[in-house]
Amino acid sequence: MNELQAASENPKWELEEELKKHWPSAVEGDFEHPEKGTIHYWAGEQRGRIVVRFTYPQQPVEDQNKVFFIDAGTEGWVLRHVSEFQNLDAELKLVKNQSFRILDELNQRYRGIIDEFMKIRDGWSHF
View 1 (spheres, rainbow, N blue to C red):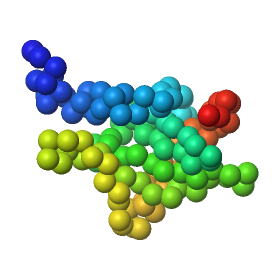
View 2: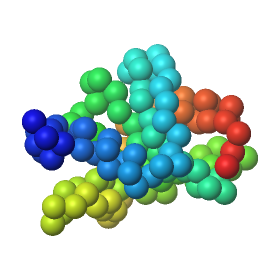
View 3: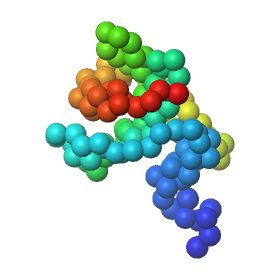
């Protein structure tokens, strides 16, 4: 099986490869969440603006391609928007979610995960 066949049969693998190719400075790691178990993340940060993608075993399928854009400050964090990787014209594109309702739902559903992520992020040496 060649690389192209493997990617088309495993969209998660394709997304991971695209992330590595187009986001080489991303920090990749894992942390333990008390309810969700091991959470894998890809993250980048610049001047308090964080971009992060989470994956975990029982994650809803519709959330697996979501990318969270977070502003961090001394008072805490704010989820600014959420985008999603979509396969458009045979290319992987990041498409911004335009729905405030969906943003609110994701904010509530991922609040605990983002809180735990922000705790480990505090230990990073910021770039």
